[in-house]
Length: 487
Image (cartoon, helix red, strand yellow):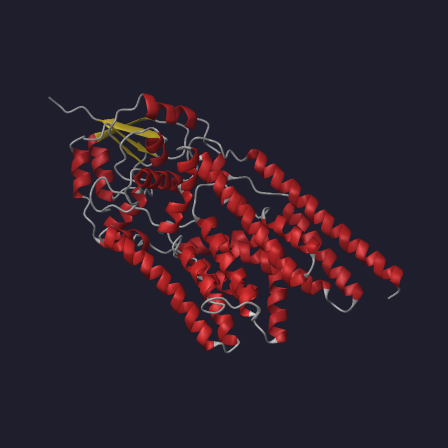
């Protein structure tokens, strides 16, 4: 190849990279403009539950009171999640916008981590910037990256652990306890956010095994487990075991294989160019007979997505895999650029660029943004006109309205009644005695596939209450009021 040919090829690669960046920035900007981050109402049921946990912390209690007794509060995440996410509320005030802004910042931090790792591994600034921005265009990341959920806090911690592991395991830096202590603590912190974030520590464990560093592998597993056990054990004593019930036992909902497969198909459909590139990186590891940490994380994270099939789960269970897809996809692109045949390298790069461009340009709409036109009126009604004693599926409206909350997580409570043998007798008795001034639900037809309340409670609502008009707002489509007692 002549110098002029090489210069021309480099210009083509640079043009492709610039196109990546422009498309990604356009997509991110469009998304940022349409997402109502400052909206003072919940767009996901867990936002209200987390807000309620904040109220308990602000009162000096823990988020894990006895979940069997009414009022029943069930908070299924670990202490690191609640005690870190409450900080913006303590600093700026009790509103959804502040912890949501923290989530947005964490998403940007994860994107930056992808760029930093790709820069370290590939030595390409352009590639690092491009794939860091591409992460922000993944539909599933955009769907969840502004909501008050715990996933991105856990992903940021587990990614930080993997980055520290990568740098220390090569033997360059030795701290107290060797290169394993800090990664193990970060992995433990991630598991104390969400228990499903096991992929990164498992990947690092497998990498150590493949390199015959058995002592380090045992130390990593032991320190990570010890960190979790010490913190959870302490809170178990403080809460008399309630935290163990909420975090580890409150997910007995049935598993639906087709639910998982539909979610997986959607992720693959939206990210198939990244999946193709990640496959190239994995194939290159196989050819070199050396398992890299990013590829190991990609493979293990793919296996852990099976949790998305539980009835109460959603596409947020694919977020860690989305992260590994972007990181490993960047590695795959770097491997393409290392092909020896310049014509093949240019053709492959152009094909992948076209595929990524097609994926970046049309973005799906966010379903959760629809049907919320009446939320402002609904939340005002709860705050200013609603009677004080409410049973509500929309917990955010009750918490922000300053009313007493009786069930923070109706779905989880119903699953515990149906599958763990909990008693709903007190709840059913209160409904039949018309102790609630109003019951706010997402659908006036209680006979539909309706899983937010236990079956006995639904029958009691139908007997003692009558449906009335609700609001065009998440989980507030119908308001049931007590039937008049015949004289």
